[in-house]
Length: 290
Image 1 (spheres, rainbow, N blue to C red):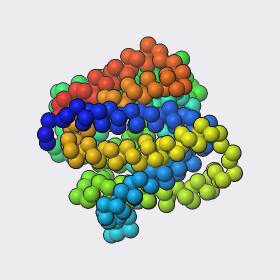
Image 2: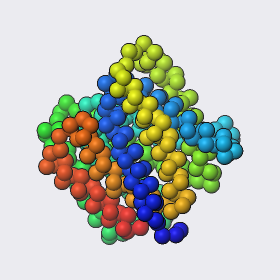
Image 3: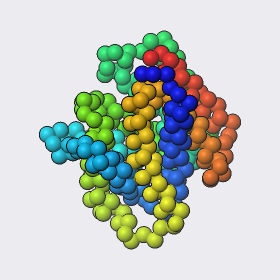
Image 4: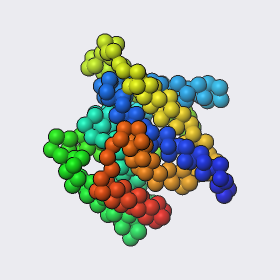
């Protein structure tokens, strides 16, 4: 891969901003929609730009091929479950906490990689990074001003959502030889199929009278934070590689915390700031070790 240009860093920053903006938009969406509806609308609107790209680039979608069970499983674990868990959790906690909790994905993936992948074993630097990062999360849970007995389980569910992303990423290795656009389009199709009966039985969103801001946020979550963000990620991956693209992990919790303050006036306590720094430093050490 060639040396990244200033424009490449600009695209990386835009990707981080888009993904970070998802958290306060999820919070706004919960004002009118239930977590199953939010998950469904995210994958439905998110599929539109991805499938359009596949159509114009003549990329074959293999959602119903012999590998359909992998696409269905990854669609559930990598999209349906985390989208639901995060939306359910964010309803009871600040969105900036969700941004920090979700940023543990690189740390969790390192632990899972050590257990299941031969070339991803711990070394000293990785271990230090994991200990620092997860110490920041443990410290965050001691902030009684923001996390108490009423929303403790919600914060845990968000952490569980981040773990689903990690497990889904490992499963994606089973079909890693396929085009990224094909895989993403296929798992979005299966996530939509899975969520249609669930949203129909559980929440019946057609009976809702949603607020305008919630409607705008949920459409944004699908089209931009899910669909367009994945396409932008593909572009960065193809041009600059995985290591460069993975640097987005440093920016997401920072931008997520800043955006939640700007748009929702969510408080940033000293413990939130310390936890944020610990997580970013932990991710840095883990990435450095690779």
